[in-house]
Length: 323
Image 1 (cartoon, helix red, strand yellow):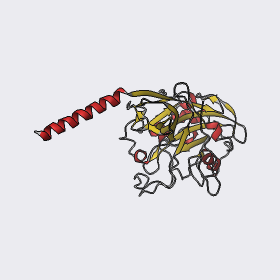
Image 2 (spheres, rainbow, N blue to C red):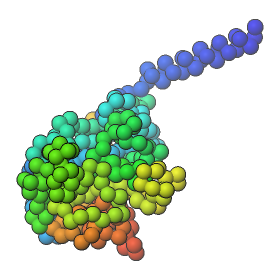
Image 3 (cartoon, rainbow, N blue to C red):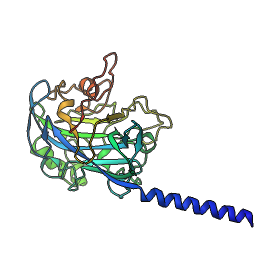
Image 4 (tube, rainbow, N blue to C red):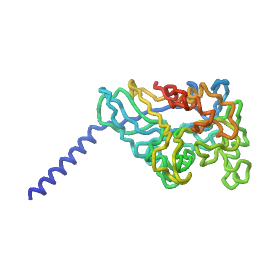
């Protein structure tokens, strides 16, 4: 019976290791907040000045995906945060942060809010945090109809080929206002919406499952910032790519000096738009920036997320800072 005894001993050792690991794990909550030029985001609030024209903007959406969260220990090592699988906001190593409440110009959203990422790590001395803005390739190109929450949210989805919007911020601006009629169209049931001009459109003119990232669409009101992967080779828009996209557009952020007990990660879209003109839109392109490298409105926006555009070097990412 020596074989069975050895197997039992190994099993008991494994159980003991698991119990010990669980006993030394600590729960963590990483807090985020959404701002526009240093002011807290709120549906329907106006913010000014924004961009190169000092525009007044009123956002109608503000949500983004965060993945690959890790804490930085005293030795500088990144220790992955094991996310709580809550069936709503967090799935595998991915979480959705949602700051809109479905009211006023945020009518295409929902009432539920989420401003934190929850999980656990081995007990230790952690001095920083690291995370990625965006959906990893393995999760990005799934069937939104069958995907678990939060990947099932159609408002954050382009198509199988392009995958999900990593960030979705829609806004009305001084030069590109969104009218009450636009909002009524957004709130109408699908059957009614299909009979209206610009059928199926949401505030800012975006259809529910929007244009491919590199494509144009009819001229529409508003200015959007939709960050996502582009250059994803597939047989069609309804087919997932089998190889990595040419432009993954994932933004990895690291704060080496961050106090988990008191710190908050600030996402500020106003900083991203500081060198952009939100009051104009090039004809035959998406309204604002939907990550298209050939879209003039994307040049300064993508640079502010830390990407090179053509021969123009990127800036350090401007979207996140720690407080």
